[in-house]
Image 1 (cartoon, each protein chain N blue to C red):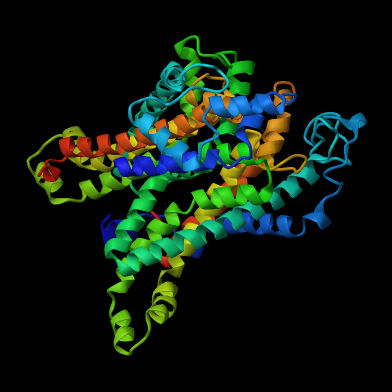
Image 2 (image 1 turned 45 degrees about the horizontal axis):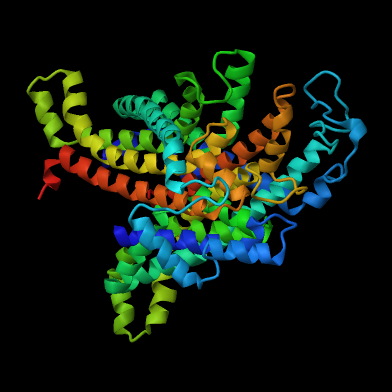
Length: 293
Length: 288
C-alpha cells in the first residue's frame, strides 16, 4: 500500500516537471534574467530533478507538502481549508447514490424479469451515458433558473450541495444498482433463504435481514471505492457549480502553473483512495464473518 | 444468478435484442458522420457570421431554414459543428482505445500468462493506476504541456488501460490452463506462438467488449476535458467545447447546450448498448 502511494506520487511529480522552465513561468513576463535566477534558487529548482523529487517525497511523508508558488501559503493549509467542501460533496453524493440504488436494486431483484426490472436496468444504462457536467448544467437551468428552487452556485447552505450531490450520485448509481440487484438475486436463490422461508419468516425479514446482509458485501466494497472516484471526479462538478473545494483549487492551480498544489492534490486524492479501499476491506470483515481470519 | 432465472428473465439477448440494434444503428450513423463529415456538412463549421448569431433551431419560432439546428454565438452553423464534432469524438474515442488497448492487453496478457513475479508487478501497476485520479492528472498534463489532439490521445491512452489489463489478465489465466494450450506446448510450440496463436484469439472476444466500453469512456472524458477548457483546442468543434462555449448563453437559449449534450449522450448510450449486446453475444464478461 505505501509503495503504491509513493509510485503514484512519483507519477504526479514527473508529470508536473515536464513543462519547460518553471522559474520563467513563475516570474512575470518582463522579469530580468537575474530575477529568474533568484527565483530558481529560492524554490530550489537549480538542483537535479531526482534530488528535488526525493526531497519532496521525504517532506511529504512528514506531512510537509511545501509552499504554494501563487498563494504564498503552505499547501497543506490550502488543502485543509478546501477539503471540507469536497468531502461534504462526496459524502452527500454517496448517500444519495446509496439511498437510490439499494432500494432500486432490491425491488428490481424481487421483481426479476418484469417490466419494472427492465426499466431499472434501462435507467442504469441511461445514467452511465450521461455526461455529468451536462446534467449539472441542465439541473441549473431547470431547478435553479426556471423553477427557482435551489441556488445555482456557492457554498453558503446545505441547499448548495443538493444539485452537485445529485449529479455526483448519478455517476455511481448505475454500478451500485446493478451490483445490489445481482447480489440480491444470487442471495434469494440460495439454500438459507429457502430455510428462512420454510421457518415461516415474514417476507420483509427474509429480504432485509437475511438476503440483504449477504448482498451488501460487494456493494459496501464498491461504495467505498466509488467515494474515491467521486472525490477525484468532483473537480468537474466543483467547476460547474463554482464550489470552492479541492478540485476547484487544483483547476485554478493548473491554470497558474502552481505545481506544489497540483502535486499535493493528486497525492492526497491517491492516498484517500488507497485508504478507502482499506476501509472497504475492513468493513467487509465486519459484515462477513467468513473473511475474519 | 441461477441458470433457470437467466432463461426466464425476459429480455432477448444479442442480435435478437432491440437495444443491440438501436446501439448498432447509432454507432453506424456516428461512423458515417465521422468518416464523411467534410461531405455531409451543409456549411463550413469554422466560418463565423456575426450577423447571424444564435439563430434558433428548426423546432422554434423564427428559424432560418438554411441553419437547421441554428447557429452559435459566433454565427457558425450548429449542425455542421455537430457533425464535425462527431468526427472528433469518434477519432479520439478510437485512437485512445487503440493506445490504451495496446498497453493494457500487453500488460494483462504477460501477467496472466507468466504468473509469479511478473504477475505481481502487473497487479501492482494496475492498483497504482487505479489510485490515480484520471480527470485531475489528465487536466494537469494537458494544462502544462498545452492543448493538442495528439497529446490528449496519448494522455488518455496512458491513463485508461486498466480495464483492458484486468480483463486480459483474468481471461488469459483461464485460457492458459485449457487442454488445447497444453497440446500446443506438447507439440513444441514456442512461447510466442502459444501466446499469439492459442491465447490471443481465445480472449479476443472479451477484449472487443472492453474496447467498446472504453471508446464510450474516452469520448465522455474528452468531452469533460474540453468542457473544462483543457481538451481539444478551439476552434475545433468538440461537443464538450461547444457546451463550454455556449454556457454563457444557456439561461436565455437553453438549446445551445441541449443540442450538443443530447448528441454526446446518444452516442455514448449507443456505444454502451452495442457493447452490452456484444457481451451477451460472445458470452464474455467485462464486469470489472
